[in-house]
Each structure stands twice: as C-alpha cells, then as structure tokens.
Image (cartoon, rainbow, N blue to C red; front, side, top):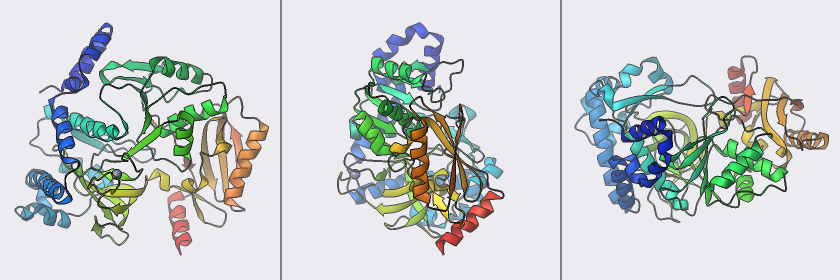
Length: 471
Ligand SMILES: [Zn+2]
C-alpha cells in the first residue's frame, strides 16, 4: 500500500501551483487513517488508571516480543525457547543490545517476512559516531505523528496550526526557506543563519505568522540572541516553542522563553523509536509514553530496572516498528527514573529526568586532569550575546580554543567579558583562547556541534580523567 503522506508530498512537489488546495484538506486526512486511529487511541488511554494502562502496555509488549522471537534471527536464536511465557518475564531475560552489535550484523535484526514495500530506510543522526542504518515501518510515520501531536497538544498545539521549522534542511543555492503546506510549516535552513541573513529570517517568520517555532534549540537560540542583541528587533508573537533532537543546556530555556515570551516545550526521542518522552502542561520533566514502548534504565552494575530511583543508561523497547524491532536497545543516553506517574497532570507515565545525550556527556579536560562538563559551563548566559555561532576545540589538556563567528555587536569589550566568564568558571584549570572565524560547520543534519575534542588518544584520556574525578 503506498504511503499516503509521501503520496501527497510527491503530488505537491510535482504541482507546486497546487499548494493552496492542500491546506483545504484537514490535516488528519492529509496524513492518513493510521494517524487518526492512533490519535483516538492516545486520547482514550492517556488518563487511564495505572493498572489499566500497565495491562494495555503488557499486551503491546507481548505482541512485539511474540513476533520478534518467532521471526527476527537475533531474538529467535537466543530467546525463541521463551515463547509462551509472560511478556514481562521474557523481557527480563533479554540482554540489552548496543548500536555497535546491530551495526555489525544488521540483517540479524530484520524480520525477513516483511516485504520491502512496507518499509523505508533511515539512519540515526548524532553529532559524532557512525550512523546506524535502520529500516522503519511505513505506517510508523503516521503513528509517530499521532504521538507528537498528542504531546504538543499539552501546550496548545492543534493540527493545522502553523510552524516555523528549523531542522536539518539544507536547500543549497543560498535558499533560506521553503514552504511545506502538507505539514503547515515553512522550513528554514539552519545552515544559513548568518547575521546578514537573520533580518530576512525574522521578517519572513513575522509575515508567515506561525503559531509555534519548532526545531533544534541551537538554531532557535541563534534567533533569540540576535533579537536580544538588536533592541529594535521585535520578536514574533507565538503560542510556544517546540524543541527536540538536541538537549537543552541550563540557561537556554530561560533565554528562549524570555526572548519569545512563550512556553518552551521539549521532548526526548530518537530515530530508533524506542522511547518518546515529553513535558506536560505543568512540568518540564519527561513523561515517557507507555503506549510507545517500555522505558528502562541500566545501572552501572548492569542491572536493568524501571523502578523509581534507577539511574544510568536509558534502554528502550519500541512497539511499532515490526520490520526491525529494537528490544532493550541501549540508547547511549543517560537519565534517572524519577517516578511512575506525574501528580500534576495525572498521567501514569514513567517520569524521566536529567536526560543527557552522549554528546552532552562530553567533557573538557582541565590541566589537573579534572573533567568539566559543557553543561556546567552554561554557554547560554548573557556573555554569549553578540555571537552568531561558537564552538569549543580542545587539542591539549588545560587549553581550550573558543572559535567564534562574531556578529556586528561583538566588540573587544564583549570578547573580554566572554573570556572572563569562562575563566571564572574553570578557575586556574583551563587557559581559554578566543579565535575569530567566518564560519563553523554544522552536523550533516544542521545540528550545532559545540565541542570538537581532539585530545591525543582522547577517549582513553577522557575515561581516565573521569574515573580519576569520581574517586
Ligand atoms: Zn505531568
């Protein structure tokens, strides 16, 4: 069966003049029947009592495991004998699997009975490491949309509302934006946000009149800093900001909310689609959808748990990708299981806090060998105003180069204040050097890379330093 959304998208691309009729079709019908069914399912189940929701999750888990244990070579070989036991007891026996294991033998993780017409290929993003090639169920696209709309609706989003989107699109040939009426959005390139172009970006946002800004917090931060640094520049009126795909640094939420005078809503998810967890109406903790997958945490001693208090690596089992099921997939990200429900909104969803991505755990190494987390540096304070972009480079212990693309208002006094703030935070342990440059490369998907760590034999050195610091 052809994917309805890509069909609409293809038609639109062939007939650009047909842009306005697309908007006349209500969003749920543009997306498709699976989307509508899942929206209904999420509305029905989201406030269910804990026992009822747990029983429903057990059913979803049983279906996913049953299929994997029967048909997916990696699971059939190792765990096929467990078929017939309860889903929870089977899950407990499954060894968490790393990205590298899947990369080494991808075919072992694919259900060979699913026809190639039913899947499409994607890859994991990330700012470092080798991308993982994954196969995704075609209807998963509609399912993912239903979950996204369900969580965004907690801050007032309704299908059909407009978004100004800042994600991994590079249109080339100096194009700054492109209209995408199938999804009620204008896609803005995060690759061309220079100080010369930013007034055009802001003018275009204002004339489009989006309800929400949506995308990478790093790109929205560039807009915010520019508005803050140019007092004549009025921010657009917005209902809110929807921020995903990158973690928020301390100070970043405050900067974005105060600049745009709107609530920032963030969530945690990934291309592998094992965990999706977002904020709620009242709290900025992440609520992990139990209808999406099972969220667990693997502690330092290897034990896997979903009990409140567990802390370590996030491990997820997704329910909706039958072609390449990820069961107890080690995300490489860390977090803490803070509870099994949110008292403020009444959802019996696991609550995860202190989520940190792999890249965010990267550390600078001080002269003493101490590791200094980028989070602790707070790179979104007022000292960073006036910069278009910046990036930290470390090639030797105790010395870090701050590469900056200065905006017109970034003068010597601002440079001195920036260095002073960084020195204050790291005391005698790091020498900071400022280097001006005209551009800083983004990741292929347009995410910011805040740290380039090139310490000789850096991994061992960082590991050793972290162990040393923990003692
Ligand atoms: Zn809540």
